[in-house]
Picture: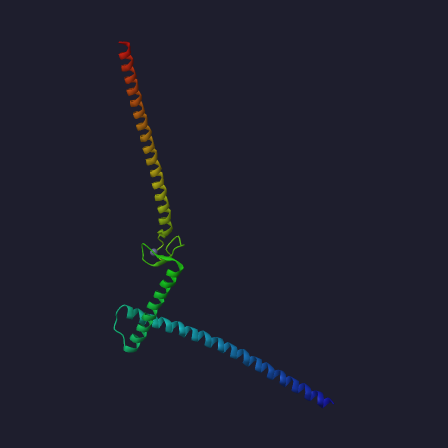
Length: 178
Ligand SMILES: [Zn+2]
């Protein structure tokens, strides 16, 4: 019986050691995987930067090897399509061209997000409103002037007619008195 317990104890401690070792391995694997991820991320960033620097050279009109040139042309073509589709979207959303930088800007924006100049669409509407109001006021003023002139004319004619009537009456009176 004593041997059995001794044996069991030994086996248990061996198992515990194996478990500990396995746990240690798992932790080590996790650490290595994290390191791999970090290195891969660093490479992805550097490759992107490398590609960007080659693309910048392409845009500057530098002579590149055929493979790089082909890739750069494909990128440029995609960029063009992206811009075209973005403009289409802006057009569908109701955008207008910025009067300063010429980029498409949503009509409901107060300022151009590219150059910061005020989006004039709204102001134009207000300006048109102001002009319409001014025109209405001017028309009202003109109408008043016309009405005043008409009134004055009627008054003048009436006065002249009254004077004429008075003159006629007076001459008639003079004639009958004589
Ligand atoms: Zn702008």
